[in-house]
Length: 299
Image 1: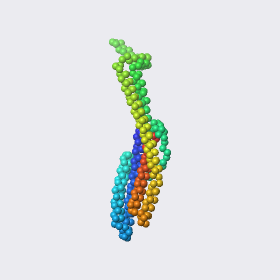
Image 2: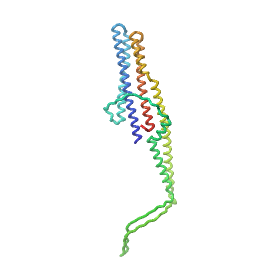
Image 3: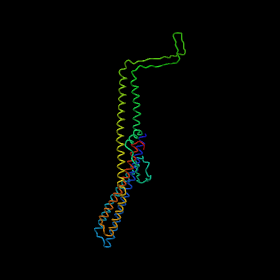
Image 4: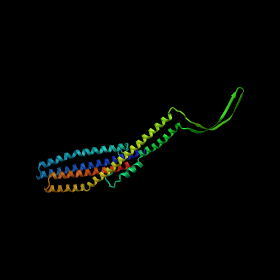
């Protein structure tokens, strides 16, 4: 039950971050489309004034048309991720607003050994296997005692009535005693039960060790994912702001005639890529932290 609850929290959280990412990618795509439409409007105005050619207008129109498919894709992505969130919430998110922002606060990742130790202490599936292993040990002891001598203390209390011919009698009766039994031969039934119990115990031991190895691998993978996402966020630090400044400079230079349309398009593409990369990096870092807490068994 605890394992299922933790898995549900993990899945819902990841689905929630996916919705936020889809929303951010759609905002970027819409922003890019509006920018292309503004360029087209400017090109048409300049063409009317005689300061631009029909090539500039045609290039701007192509840019607008190329930007529309990304808007459509991201709108569909928003619907898909929203349905995914509703699915993992068993339909309880239908019609509810999803609010939030992809703001990743970077904190130092724990050491791998610390994660492994926490997982071994808190993971519910490992705790269940440990309990089952203890039960299996007791079952082995019980099975081994099947062909051993047994000493029992027995007692009884009752009422007895006897009748023979014309004579009859009745009264209370009781008995008490210590009994020793020894199964000299039971057709190897006790031996078979012992072998079966020992086999079950070895199977649980193998499953426990396999689960520990899997948790060890999950721990290393989760920590590496956090480090990777953290490094990508650090590498993208300030990139979006620089791309915005670059686009502003390119547009101003194009207005003064010292920059070409290609320079403006490149700057706009760089800004869109920078914003999208940052949004994905923030989502990946948040998901990596959630996954790490799930691996530790502390989610």
